[in-house]
Structure formats: structure tokens, C-alpha cells
Length: 408
Image 1 (tube, rainbow, N blue to C red):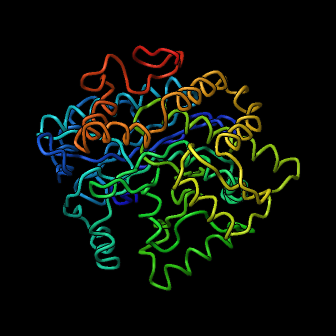
Image 2 (image 1 turned 60 degrees about the vertical axis):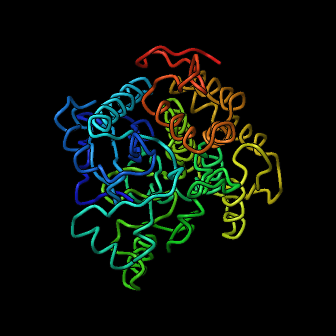
């Protein structure tokens, strides 16, 4: 959920690049008590302190989220990955320093590792959410990574979202980073998606024939009393309600900035490829809703380490094979932006070291859930985990990005 009453849309560039080139990312984080590692309602003082520090970009935004244990960092508009990573790193450093000063730690994960509770943030909209959803809202602590890619207009945005539908489960599998459910191993790579499924209008979005059809469906859900307002859909991709972008929200909050950059690069390439196909008259395949749901559940259950459902071919395939097919499909778009070498290195790193869920589970299995929290906090801050010589999952090279990185 995005704090719409606080969210200040970033300004558009003075000269608009070609559609499918501009990027922006929103990262949601949890705040935990530095001593107990349980969630802590520190968002107010952390954001207040962070806003007194230099911003990572003039148009970047740091803000509260639904829970007082959540904060969000929104980058400004970027056109290349190194600049995006610089902003992501800067926002994490700022928020982490503010959290430490308030007795907490900043962690990037899809759900809390340990059980705990925090009040909802103040504000009229959050109060309306609390009234409508009751316990669902009170216990909602899911964090995601949202990638925005610029498109020419809202009509195009709806057509692009249709095109993206079959690939959203693959983006989830790559990002899976929420294996814990209140201190217990859920058995899933992304329990966040299962937690989010409790809300109406979640999961893979329906296929819409036009922007008017999309907007009418959202208005109907609001009129039926299951959404607070038109900005509150839970679909994993949508036309942004307040920006000229496609907003993709398939990913869990990611442990490292290079994993976030991977999501951004792939999402931009998906949008660019969709625009090329649509311009050539090649529309999105009609994926049945039930198969789309099956593909999403399978990605949440297994991540990259198991089988996947190909909703277009309607078959069961190895998850890594489906990812390989996606990379082959996106190679021309990735080459056009210069992102292909980074993406290949990042995917190799995930294959070698595991997704965030694998790394969390590995840390927790050895030393218990608190060790998973410590590992997450170290990853989020960009420091080596306790007792390790290097990152649990070393970053592939990204020319121009801040800090030192090395290829896997």
C-alpha cells in the first residue's frame, strides 16, 4: 500500500525520453528493534530524522506507510541503472542511519521474520483503511518493491499491463524474500503474496480492453465497498493512478540494491518489448485467469528452486527454464539500454547464492530466526553480515554504481 496522502509524485523530466526508458522505484522497508529484532513502531521519528539529511535525489521521497513499523523510499526519475542504484543506496543509508539513531534497524524483506505488532500510521486515509479491513489492516506488514516505467498515455498503460500478465510470476520468483511467518518457516519462498491474497482485487490483474474498462472496474470495486478509493487496488501491475507510468508490484522487498536494480532492468525491458509488440500489432496472449493464479501460486511456493507454470503454453516447466526464456525474449531491449551484461551477472549470482528467501532460510536454519533478521539488516545497510567476509550474496558489477562490487 502506498501512502497517497504523503506521496509526492516526482516531477517529469524537462525533456521526455522515449517511452519505456524512464524508471522510478518505490522500496518499502520494515523497522525492527535493534535489541529484540521484533518490529518496532518507529516510522514517525525515523522519517522525521531522515528528512533532515541530504536527499538521495532532488525528486526522491521518504515517507511513512500503513504501519508505524514501515517506511518507504521513492527514487526520483532515472534513465540508467547506475543512477538508479546511486539513489537506492543513498535512501537505504539515510533510513538505516535514522533507524539506528532511534534504537532500531532497517530491514528489507517481504514480511517480518519474528512476530510482533505496531499501530497503524495516523491520517484520514489510513483510518478509513483500518475501518474497512479491521484485523486484516491491523496485521498487514507486507513490503514490496514497486517499479514505474514511463509510457505515453493511460490507454497504452492498460495494453502494456495486459502484455505483462504472463511474466509477473517470474518477477516474483526472482524476488522471493519472505519465507517466514511469525517466527516459523512458512514453506513458501514468498509468503507475502499469500498474505496479500486476503485482500480483494489482489494477484494477477484481469485483462482489460481499454483504459475506460479498467477504470470502470476499479470504480465498481470502490462502489461495492471493497476498496477505499481508486488508488487502492492490490493487483501486481497497473496503470499508475497518479503518474504516466506502468507500475509493477510483483516483487517482494529485496535484500540488496542490485536485486532491486535487476527487477527494475527486467521490468523496463518488459515494458519496452511490450511497446514494440503493440506497435507492430502483436497483442498480449489471452491467459486464463485460473492459469495465471496457478502460475503466481507456484512462484510464491517455490521461487526459482522448483517448477513453474507457463500460463501461455499451459504446461509445467522448471522455473529456471522459464526465466531463461524470459531473458532470451528481453535480450534486444536489454541490449538497447546497455543492461544486458548486468542482468546476466545478477541472474548468475541468484543461481549461485540463492534468492532472498533461500538466504533468509539458510541463516535461520543455522542460528535461528534472529540470525535471519541480522543478515537482513546487514544486507539492507550494505555491510557484510556478522561473521562473514563478504556479502551473503555478492553484487555483480554495475558500472557507475556507488560502492565496490564484484562479479560472482
